[in-house]
Image 1: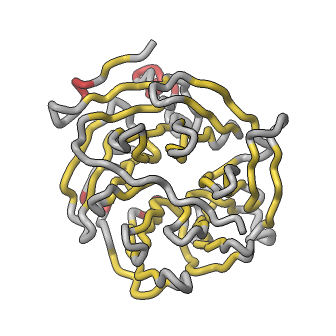
Image 2: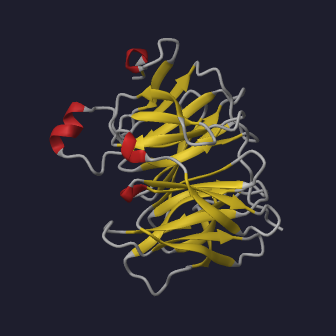
Length: 306
């Protein structure tokens, strides 16, 4: 049964609802598909894509062959994805789901896998790796181009997260979430090259650390504060301008959607919680909708399948 959680909102005008109390082990990557008018998200550790309408009524789940870190929409209706084993296309219109493998950017590293990913304004897929045990700074940030060549842009991270792009496509936001570091890069829209890395948000100043993120139609950056029970909204300069409390400790990613693009959907996780925490947070792993924020998002770009 859906629960109205408005009392958990720091801003009294907000409505926060758990629209899918499905207890994902590691819910991630909510994406509103404006063409199909439905919501997709993943349970990363359970190797599943989920689909629902805007109300959270689950239409279907799609089993996958491998642990998955992220998905993005494609221009031809498929998904581009970062599996543990590499980049791939996913076609959920096939039964069973068809996975077309592209390649693994780090076959020599047994202790890393692909994690957070997002399509930029030019139709390229950016995806970072993570150290599986959070034990070494040997993860990297990759750009997968429409010709299916990938390029390593940066390295020396522990867990890649927080990928999002400014409205003009000239800034890339990125978080190394296990060490509380968040950056913004100058992005050349034409070449896809990065330069001028600067500190963005000092997440040591807040409870929680930036996990998945998105940008709204005003250019502000919304990040899920994992272990912080909240969503933070930051200006392009990195100043926190809003803080929305949630009834779960571990929100993982947020995305705008709905017919008017004015609802913020938030996934959450419970894999890092002990039994007592899970018993206390019965909605951990659920999917939430936040309404009444007074802002809108923009449709997600699509990977350019040429």
